[in-house]
Structures are given as C-alpha cells and as structure tokens.
Amino acid sequence: MLKKTDDKINVVPSQEKSLSVSIDGKVYEIHAKSEVPINMLPNVRYGEKQTENSAYISLSSFQQPPADSKYRRGADKNFQKFMKAGSNFQDKKNIIVDLRSNTGGYDTYGTNFLINLYVPGSKNMTEYDLARYGIGIASKFWKAPDFVSTKQVLSPALIQLEAMKYKKFGTPTKEADNIIKNMVFEQKNEPCKITYSSTKFLDKMAEYALPVPEKPHFTGKLIILIDRNSASATEEFVWTAKDDFGEQVIVVGENSSGCCEYWDVNPFRLPESKIVFYISATEMTGSLKRFKNWHGEGFGVYPDVWTNGVDLLETLVNLTSDESLREKIQNIEWGLQ
Image (cartoon, rainbow, N blue to C red):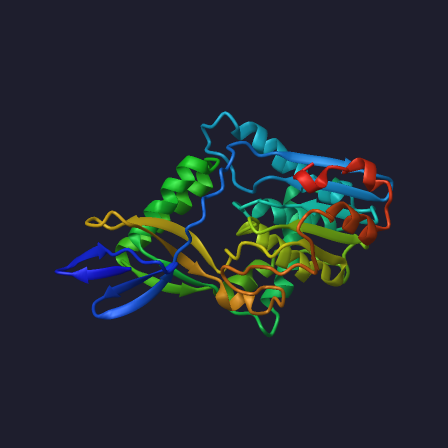
C-alpha cells in the first residue's frame, strides 16, 4: 500500500494485489500484478503451413523492433508476409491465425491482413487503394448507432514521449516529421487538454473510401488462437475480425490478457519512492462495450471454444473437418508452428 506523508509517498508492504494511493486526501485503488513478466524476444517470427483446404499462419509479435536493431529488417519482411497472407489465402475454406503469446504492438499489420482477406482481388491492388477500402470497411464501425468516441489526454510531456517513440521505432518521412513538429507547436498554446474522436474528422476520412462489398470475399472459417498472454493489438485484431467477418470468426484457446481499454501507456517514476506508474493517455472503454466477447481489463476476450492446449490439434481438426492438419501442425500444442 502507498501512503502520502509530508508530501512524500512511502511504500508499506501489503499482501493484497493492489495499491491504495492517497492523493490530495482522495484514495485510489490501483490493481497490481506480481507475475513474472514475459521474456519477449527481439525478433519477430512468422510461420505458414497449408493443406488443400486450410491455411495456418502464426505471428509472434506485432511489435516493431527499434529502427537501429539488427532484427528490424527481418521483422519488416515477416510483417509483409503476414499481411499478404490475407490475399494469398482468400479462397481457402479455413484460415487459422495463431496469435498465442503475441503481446501486441502496432495494429496496422492485423488491420491490413483483414483488409486483404475482405476485399476481392486484393492481391493485385496498390497499397493506396487497399487503404481506401480499409477506410470504407472501418466507416461502417464509425457510423454504427452504438459508436463511442475515443477519449484522449494531450500534454507537452506526452507529445514529447510520442516524438521519442517515433524517432526510435518509426520509419522517418517528411510528412511524419511535420506532423510531430505541428503537434509539439500546438501544445505550447494548450498545455493540457482532453479530446474526443471527432465524427467530423471521421466523416472527412470516409470521403476517400472506395465502395465496399456488403459481404467479405473470404467465405470460410477464420479461426484465431489466443491464450492468457495475447494482449493489446492482438485483442484488437480479434474484435475487428468479429466486426468484419461476424460468425465466420471462431476464437479458440484461453481468455486473453485483458489489455485493450487503455492505449498509449507511458511510464512515470515518482521522484521520492522511485515507484514507476504506467499511465494511459487514451481510453477505449466505451468503444469496446459493443464487443460481446470483451470482458474487461484483466479478463480480456473470452474464446468461443475453450482449450488449454492439450487437445488443441483435435479441436482444430474437428472445427475444420480437415484431417490433413494432423500431419501439418502435429506439434501445435507446444507452441507456434
């Protein structure tokens, strides 16, 4: 437990998995986790196997390594393979996407995979046209009667953090550089503010959309594998797939991590106690209320078919009616293939 005394915050041992923080006389309960963190590998691994009727693909992470990392080039190639798999396997009866222990990262790669899977002839389209189709697909979500805007806090400190992230992880372009400079400049006039997704902005984006087919080109089963370590962008991939493909999507495994309601999480260290708080700048709570499989932070996405992995191969064979999978992914219980 944390106690504030003489303008300092002291740490008091507690058996509870939570922290009580008193700030200006008001007490807040903050959930804490004591589990050992996942040992994340710096490289991004992609796997692909197929039978006549089914395709299996796996991706270990959506997180892009730093621009100067020796793993960056390989990661970019694997992200491209993952995105293009959507168009390459459009005509399969079953697609299995294995995202177990994928703790998230950038949502771009998952979104582009789903666009490629949805739009007919996506294999021969330019990236620009695919992006315009993507806007068309997303605009159905924006215009839904139960759409809730995203809440975001902006401040000079947060903008500077975003700029630092961009320099470390981003691919430098003149346009992106100008966006960062304008954001920093605007914050000088408005030190701190809370903003909401503007429907006017979204409607403006929709002007660039290409007409989207009422139903996706892919008509088979989209089976997504998750576990307790699947988080953030992986969870977003699941509910976006559910939005776009409806009952074609079958989620298999365990409930996910439950790390999707709060985005743009940044660390802040208290000067006296040295305790590090991770504080979110973006809240997605309202948007996720429309997704029935979402059960909140710490609980995550509940699968349609529960399995702890021991019977995973048998489950996939039953769902796809594809006996050939027994040989192709025979060791799937042990991890990504």
